[in-house]
Length: 250
Image 1 (cartoon, rainbow, N blue to C red):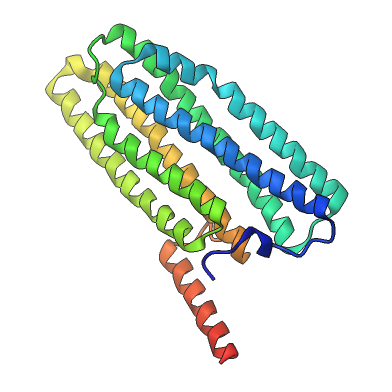
Image 2 (cartoon, rainbow, N blue to C red; image 1 turned 90 degrees about the vertical axis):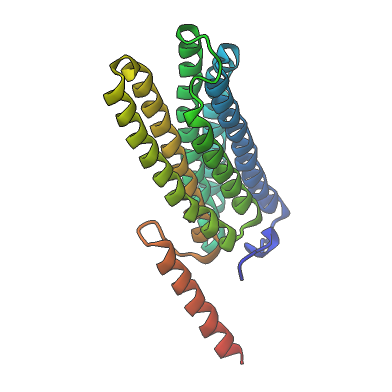
């Protein structure tokens, strides 16, 4: 089953326990929403040479950090007082891992903000870093897709989003080659080109973290750790499991 409703995670004895778990999931989505907005603003600030927006992005990182700490504390409390098992335990483990990746996305976004504030002062012309616009959009879409898959507990969507990491890696490699060519052709462009490479690397890492979140969705729903497997292998395993289950049912 690709999509699993929240109520299917487990049959809980206490409604308060239900509320605690739902509160944790809601907190993750709120944190994800903030991180997603920060990422979009960071890319916008870089491409548009908006120092004010860049400074705002950098300042907001403390909110992301505070949300990670709060959610982690909620998870620790549930582990200590409720002793969750089976799917509930997978939920807590996946949440702890997810907020770590979201916090790291926040760190990469903070780099974008600081860079936008710094570079806009030395490069007054807007859109000086337009090379980053496309990869920035790809990464932002991937983060949004990963969070949507988490919200809906949709393994098919999670795997589809995880596949996009290859596209981002390829885009990053193309950008690397272009930057090397720029530096060889015009030594005066070396500093600017190195800045582009550094920021592109930050965006590529965001894609890696989004892929990780997709892997946690699969673990949470199906109990499969797919971190070191190819997407093709995972899809084959899931397909085989479904076929076996259907054969047993028939």
